[in-house]
Length: 321
Image (cartoon, helix red, strand yellow):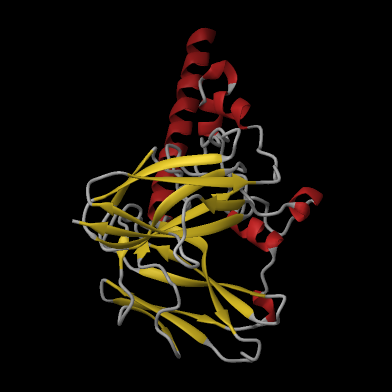
């Protein structure tokens, strides 16, 4: 009788726990915002500003593409422009999925004062505007960047993070004036070589033990609940090439680390729970082959990222038939 009572009690507890899990799942599903693979709009974002040594300023922008998969193409013009003044301020025309922070900078003069600079983007009939000013609460430094991108916890810093310097990426090969320009035929691979120098900070987190878990199954990392109020990012040096401007598409070999906040476990992204930093070449040289699917003029964007800070370079590619 005692065994039967224990069994009934265990079964009751199991049913009770299952009911709680199901109701929690349904509640979270009902409260969670819907996510979309494609067909949604884009939200430009003003990240903040910093002052240069000569007294001029730069406004720093990013964006939120509401799609998880669709990479939006929005040429400079009536649906992608700055105002007042020049509509082309170097903004991207090829937008990667989801949240992309600190994507590009717009210089403004030292006497900018209290004026506004507006970036307007229209996608799928939805128009969104980001307004940039020199408001004091938008000042950006390296600690703010590391915190906002998830390298640090919200509002925290450390001696290591304060001493970290951004990596330096240098694309190899000839230049045309101050620009890096390459030419290739559509469908044929173009090899790009870039050197990345870094100070080794912040030190990569001990991801291997967390990844394997007890018994080497990885279940510990998969099942760990979120423990941060901000986005989490794994520190570790990588170089990522992507299209910044261009009408067509390109494939990269080897596949590149995603520079956007793809938080899915299987994502090749520092924001993915199971991501492990790739090996750093001993000589600091990174090689990639890029193949374009159609002719046109493209701008490729190379971002070297150590987890906390980053450095960008751009290559113009003339793709012929």
